Image 1 (tube, chains in turn yellow, orange):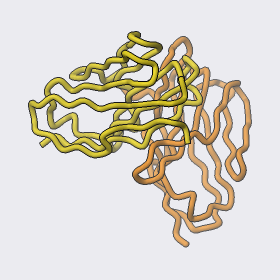
Image 2 (image 1 turned 120 degrees about the horizontal axis):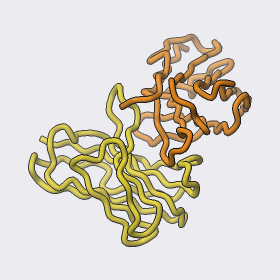
Image 3 (image 1 turned 45 degrees about the vertical axis):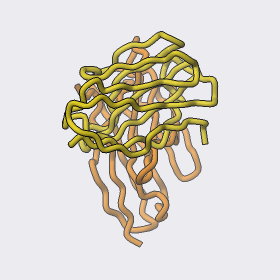
Image 4 (image 1 turned 135 degrees about the vertical axis):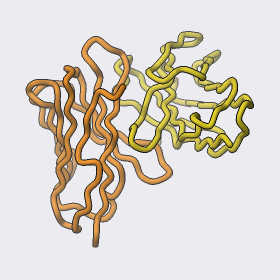
Length: 113
Length: 111
């Protein structure tokens, strides 16, 4: 398995509270991605990073922010969680800027009540 | 919005049968990838395709990059119980850095 660890694996939070999800890699890959997975939508890109402090938006970035202060860590923050952000969140890493050969973490199931 | 159409959305087959699924788009892709996801796990890369017309196998799995670069298919031969899961296609659009995923095909196998 690629060295990707997501934490926490499960979280229940209340509407309006801030939430931070962490992705940690031991592969020294340059590119890191955050996706959300919802029934009928496959995986949708939230944000991605192409280096330390270099990030860009994906197709569903509203309500999310990210930070990457070290190569190995990529944080996803929901500033004020909403019920529509209940989802399974996956982190992925890649050596290629094409996102190919991307390796995924095990996911974080987030429930906003 | 979603730029890949993956079909079928679900399949119910008998063990030993062959399986075929595909992804189509109105856009041109530079790369096609096929992933499998088991319950409670992240997607795992099965096959990567980089050239139009490319046909690649991985054991009982075969995938092809369509000549028009707008489609791809995945075939699984002689299905076994461990093939159960959700299969996703993903593509890298021409000129883009990011992957776009299909909605997934859920495969169920009756023993």
